[in-house]
Image 1: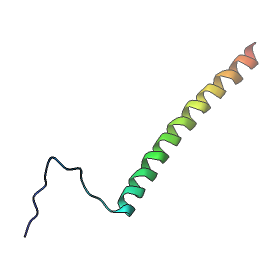
Image 2 (image 1 turned 90 degrees about the vertical axis):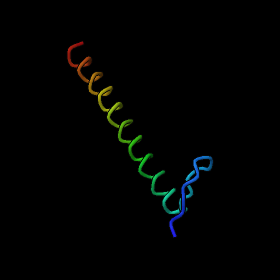
Image 3 (image 1 turned 120 degrees about the vertical axis):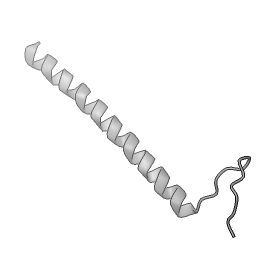
Image 4 (image 1 turned 45 degrees about the vertical axis):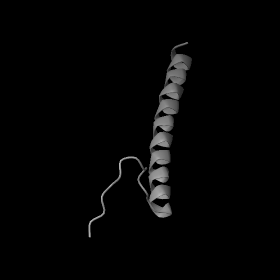
Length: 51
């Protein structure tokens, strides 16, 4: 028997699925932050070299 999805209720997922999704989102945000910090640090290094 196939269960119909009800549009008025949020999707139900297991705790493991939730934690896995949160971990992936957090890793993605951290990698973006690292790239921003790295590019900012590189700009300061260039300013110090030519300043």
